[in-house]
Image (spheres, rainbow, N blue to C red):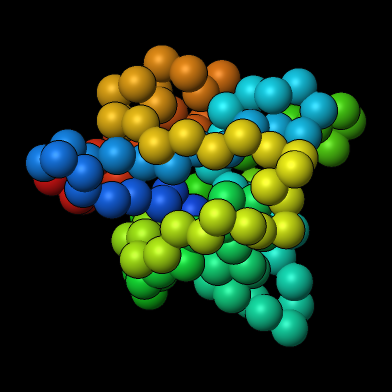
Length: 134
């Protein structure tokens, strides 16, 4: 039986100068590049929680696709997480947001994002996003 997703997140994207870019953020502790993600809150559901994480961690708002593009798993200490991932076309990038002082954010072409992301499970999600958006 497949594990239920306990987290949700977004691959935030834009087209800048004719190039498809995604927005990555750093983790709070080790500064690794990841997508905005976090625990699914019951009152928000998976989509609403993903939208909230995009705002809190990356300071972006936009159109969140209705259907997730996939999921991936990762381990943090002894905890295992399963993350449901949505695409978000960014419409607004805020200059101030809740975790601005805790994280860096950076736009980059998907090819560069694939090089800097450490989480093995996240790489196929980025490939899928590239396929769907080209």
